[in-house]
Length: 603
Image 1 (cartoon, rainbow, N blue to C red):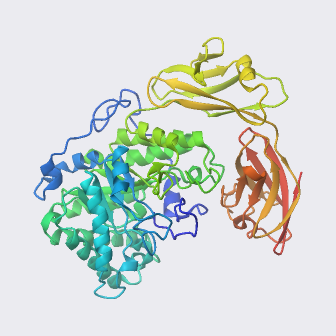
Image 2: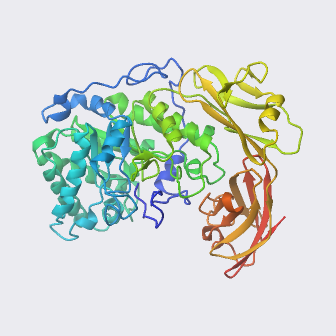
Image 3: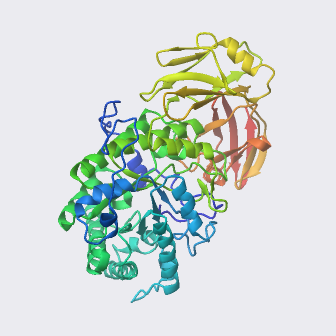
């Protein structure tokens, strides 16, 4: 990722593109045209096998992976052998130093842990600018170069493939190329000349990546951007190949503009690759899902048909543009922009996130794309070298090789104090067979405790009552639906009542709205003026951004309205907030700004 870092806790990405729909990534996320062909159970994977079986990992001989003289025709096998991949994020790319964004110093044990969990490659993002002279000859500090080499060598010693790049330099100084063309290009060439020289004798398990998410500030239009992108990639290619040694045949990874997976930008990259006449090139894009879902804005609370179509479109285009023509695709970053984040309440509902991760890995297998999980510290705890959320990682790991069944929801709300009724949800079997429903290890009885008719799973009212009777607000029981393969789908039975809010006063620095959640959880919030127009930092849609404009505080029974919302409200204009909860309940709340003072009243 390449956005300006935020001053936040170590578990966050330090990059925030959550609020603006006009960024390259958000434009890409809204590309929802086209469906992925071949999603049927009988479709054959690009790596062999059925859509539901583990793909055969291509065998790459020691000679082809480790020698400079191997033929370029093996590039598809090499990149396939890199699946799955993991990012050492917010570390050597941190500004100004390796530990500046909250991660500890990397050790060999880091890669031992990653390798043990089944990853076959790592992307090591590096920001060079704070360790490099800003004037010619743009010398990189020898101590820093040695540290980068130490980290790379540790990963290779563990048998991991490594992608080494130029990372936040992309927005720090490379983005200025439209107005400082020669200066930027000279520095870019000097940077890669030094990197190539330092690593020229490394085994071919090391790959070089031109630049992370390149963008061009002040470019006059698409034609100029394409020209500049081609110049950057060509300069990288020329410098590395001229450095000799194993760099003569090393796999080089070339990005689209912004590492964005839209068809026009992939077409541009394809044409550039053709012009280089080099059989050792790899294409790279990034994917963080349909943007409104990835950050929970504009009502994008679920992994719905729009989100699925967006994913279909990107992976289909990557396959058809590159993979089908023998050019491997390394998806250098994947995940969700705002999940997981252990420093805040979950922006994306857990079950919806699990559906996304499961589907992403399946699409990658079908398209033959190698994926690299972006991990700024949110998945692997770098201090303990354990997964922060083992259950989430189990889903991710399982999805590398097989499908898992899901359902329309993982939450069934049971209103307190009302007659209990049957509860029905829709199963998404993903080509698998439903097997059983369990609770606390007990196998429930089909036809008695529940029924399955087609894709509908119905819990009998007697079962719901038995499992929730006597429980206070919150989760009363967790059921597990098991399928013929993959992970079980957990379904929480939640006892709840409509939330209750109270009046409050605050400032534009924050307004704390007292909220008794009564077992319910917040999904999203709308903010409108009297005429129905959007009020707040998001002006193109009435739904504001979760954890940016507002954030639930469940332990303290409150919802905090953030400065990102309040400072953008018109002075003296009444604003109506509509809070949407996962049970389906909505609450209306009113706020008015008067200078820096803000008052709130419950309906």
